[in-house]
Length: 231
Image (tube, rainbow, N blue to C red; front, side, top):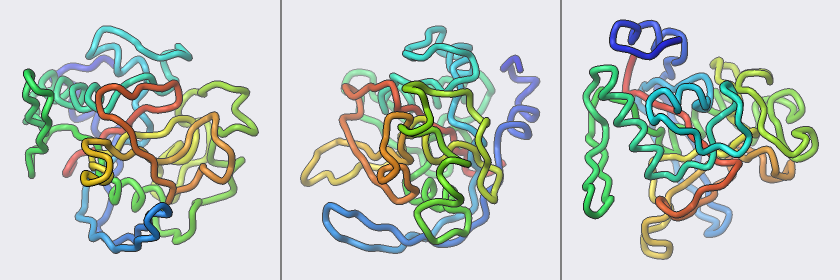
């Protein structure tokens, strides 16, 4: 689908799912901390962002495993939020991020109508889709991971979706989330979730948390998924 202002409603209808409000139980295995997060209704894209949609806005494709419908990878957290703003601008939506070009300091504009990354609580809540365990079905049905990926990404949407119609939430590529992981210990490091094509089964879970540098860290099993405050 060609991305332009006139097709905005079709894009949101085709690619996004409305996620109901609720709550989710979070855990960090490193610190053994448990906490509960309240989730307001929001919208999340059915798929990790594909390379064709990334390239139409950014005009380059950083991915290692190049194919239009495979997830874009090799993007940093900063490049992910820059994409969100660029897509919002093309489609005439209010940008969700304020980005200082001299420092690369990023601030989320609360309530903005534009595209953004999900918070990690939103991500986990949407991934589990009402299932309390670490996976919403058997791993072979829902995920590309080390045992079945043949050492590569695959086109988005080939595995079974969860109960809310979201594909590849586990496996294929990890997905950047908005949140800083632990500012006191790790500084500006941001969270990513979900496991990727090169991960063992023990890492391909809804509850697994990882983190890295928002600007320097780019790998071939890490991409992102788009969120909106509402449809």
